[in-house]
Amino acid sequence: MPAAVSADRPRTRRTAPPVLVRQVRNGVEESVHRGDIVETDVNGRLLRALGDPDHVVNLRSCVKPFGMVSLIEAGGIEAFDLGPPELAIMASSHSGEDLHVRTLQGVYRRAGISQSLLACGAEKMPLDELTAARLARDGEKASPVRHMCSGQHSVFLLLCKLRGWEPDGYWLEEHPAQLAYRDVVARAFGTTTSKLRLGIDGCGIPTYAFPLRAIARAYAFLADPSAVAASDTRAPVAPALRTVRDAMLAHPEMVAGTRDRIDTSVMKALPDRLVSKGGMEALRGLAILAGPRGNGARVPASGMAIKIEDGDGYDRATWAATIEALRQAGVLSGQALRVLGRYHRPVETDPHGRVSAEAIPSFELAPLGELIR
Image (cartoon, rainbow, N blue to C red; front, side):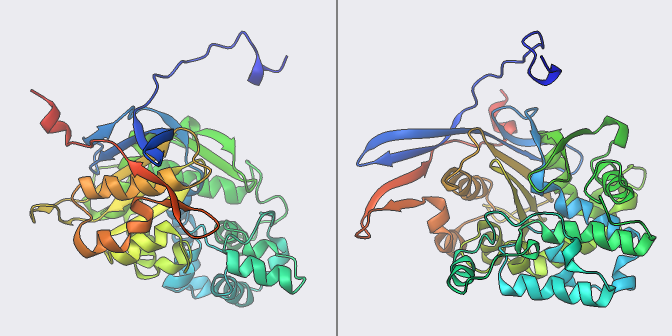
């Protein structure tokens, strides 16, 4: 029997995490979504936590803002004349709209790269329903450039072009482009490549596993790269990471899409206030910039990691938990909260447009200091 499924392999049983969101129909609770929420400062000090801060999860697409640093450090901005929209889309999980395709194709033309080299696949893409419907109507098959990870894969192809590496097999674990990307991820998380725990992501490249508190810490670093001490091993990454952050803040439509994508919607509702980046299996990282919270007092930058236990195939739990966590943390209120109402309490409708069920956030995310007596 393979070791990966061996009955003799020790298994760690995790305590069931708290309920974060309840799906309610006509007053009857039909199902619940459990999960974990962690907020830390840039040094990893826990600010808020619900559930298990040490729950290990795969980063999936939440790695993208950090891995993008590899291309910047290699001189990619100057070599390929990359502007903020292009940097943002290479740190994105975009919707595959024409806007996204044109942006990436412009990069390929300047770099002299064929988009046929993209190896991310195109199954179930694009994410944007209107674009997918138009392609189907016209009998056009989506190409890999419409895949939500084509921006990230473009980083590897540009690294190959810049360094003279053979692009064949760029997705493989030991390819030089992956090694360069991995080195930056390790440094951004304050660790070494030898300590990284690798898996295979849905688009074929390596993914990396970290405890939620480490992900929150990394997103706090993204929120304010200058906050780390000069002696911190992460400090050399800070200048390039700031460039990535600023590009994402300036172009939220590139981070996800123009229609009904929560990452873009939250960033547009709170301009220059946070970076939101989701990953598959219901993980979200939030880089919350320094600024006023709840009572108006200015609070330093922080990072938040949210994970829904069941993977949340309907999106409703990650939507509701994200908005409610930001509300309870004092980041989101007033008009911005009202604008995001469809994500805060997502509804289900019947064929006649009547609301038939609602996902209701149901948790208390008190600051940890308030819980200590």
